[in-house]
Image (cartoon, rainbow, N blue to C red; front, top):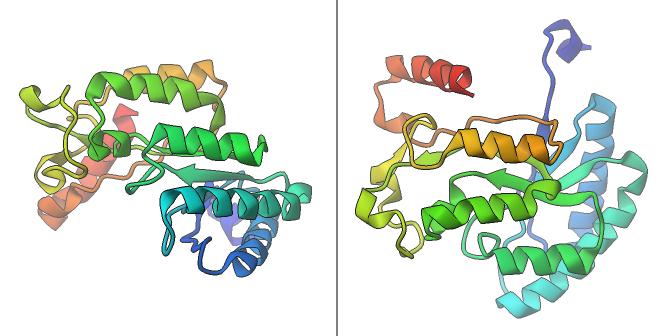
Length: 219
């Protein structure tokens, strides 16, 4: 009632999961969150698929089995779960694809962070291949950008290279949002474009709201 009165729509929930540390608890928590999301008309939940104690191969197997249980436990809600591409595991497109294939549910999708593949070190021109490949699975977005020196854009860089120095507002970076939005529209995406500007901390506090408003206008 409060959301409706203030004309606010919740486009996604955000969860910080620990799937390989407490799988049964995670399944129960995801089911509870999905019921709440359905009640609030929220179509997607961002989930955190990151290994906490196991190697990547073991984690892939464990995460696949746990997420199958999550999908079964939340089937009645119709709510989608979006794995965010972040960190040193889910920014690997091969890992993501193996996980999607292993779970085999259309409700398991991607929370696309538009800056994180670039942050991970993938060359700029490769990003759009990944965006296109995963577009049918995107259920939620984090719009983020980075402005690297021209000589670094097409290199395979070290993960997180100089991110704090080169992160920037989404309308000032290397990642082309005209291309991203076209890819999303072609895939039939209908949820949010969520601004996640991690460069705001470099600005005086009085300027941050103006920059965010500009970014919303840009989108």
